[in-house]
Image 1: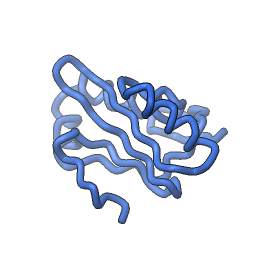
Image 2: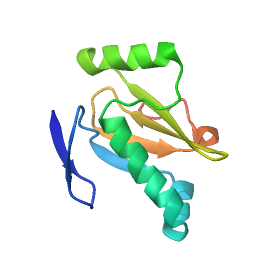
Image 3: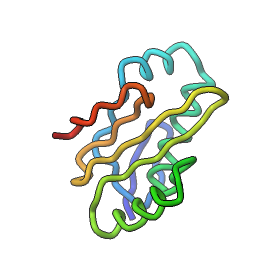
Image 4: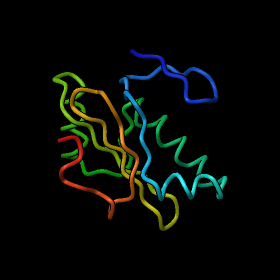
Length: 109
C-alpha cells in the first residue's frame, strides 16, 4: 500500500499513481467548476484504491491482474454526461486524467 497527498490530506491507496497529469481541458474546467473539480478528485481517490469505475468486466479483471504483474491501469468515471478516463502507466511513473476523445494511443511511448 502506498500513501499519497492529494492536497487535501494523506490517503492510503492500493497503488502509487506516480506523477498526476491532467489534460489542459480537464485542468481548465476544474479551475472554474467546483463540482467537476470534486468529481475529478474523488475519481483519482477511487482509482488509486482500485475502484475502476464504469469500465467493462474484462477491463476490471485486466486491471486487477495488472496490480500484481505491473501492467497498465485504466479506469473510467461518469458525472452526468461527462466521462473521464484515468490511465496509470505500466511503470507507475505517471497517471493521466483525460476525456475519452483526448486519448492518444502513443501516451507513454
